[in-house]
Image (cartoon, one colour):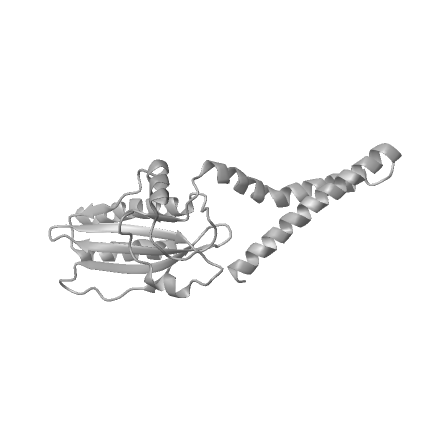
Length: 221
């Protein structure tokens, strides 16, 4: 199902669940005031409605806990380019663009640990480790050009999805050849919504931590 259509269905589900709670409230009043039958069914209806509304309640809490961000990058001045993402995003999706100063300030305040990584290894060795981490996470690679000798910058792109509903985010990983070392920058941007509830920051942080582990393993061989 298209994600945009799914979001509308989720909204409809929430409206129906709220309407069910209101109807149950009327039913309880009739049961309590008139002695009508159906109290047990009304209780079951309340429990089902609350269960359906639970994810929306959690999202409401996250709305206040996390900063309003949907595009996270280790480089806030010149983030890795999302070339393929810009081509596939339509009018219903967030448009790919530069990270504003306001968004950058919110990211630095909320996620100061989101920084790039420098490895004392060649771009080829680092790219091999990057490919391994991507494969373990099951991301779909949408751009993986060949690595050219002497090329200073190399960028690959992939699509990652959230665990619960499979909402897509576009990911770009950039390798910069510094001669003696290779610097890795990463960007993760949600296709839908103004607030990612910390999803992109967690994705970048966990990926780079896994890359650290992979590169440490290479160094110990």
